[in-house]
Length: 127
Image 1 (cartoon, rainbow, N blue to C red):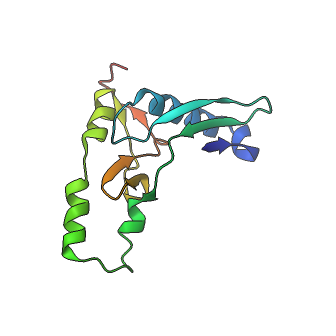
Image 2: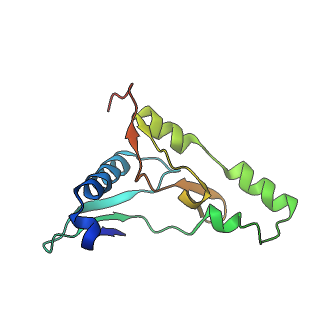
Image 3: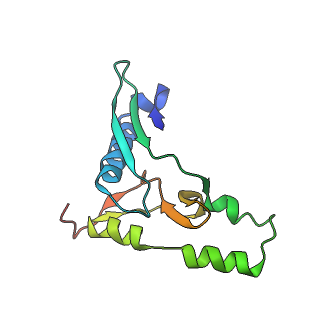
């Protein structure tokens, strides 16, 4: 669950960016993109986005302080599926912030892209 409140909620630019993220994420239906289940505004004025519950970010798995065997590294690399990113691009969305922290490892093998907070529509967008 992402909730925008306090000073951030009163900042029109931040609120617009949050709403843009929620709208983009809700249009993306792909196994390698975190699912947005609901979005809206509470009666108290809090803007929210509810997403599927996932596991740990890929950044946790790629922490340089943790040793990894070669087989484990190959398994994560094989699991890296950019088709979710391709699905976003097909809708005209450019993620602009893809990094290990914005990739979740689910069930030990499936990678999901999240955090479309800096999403931008490409010039060739049909969306």
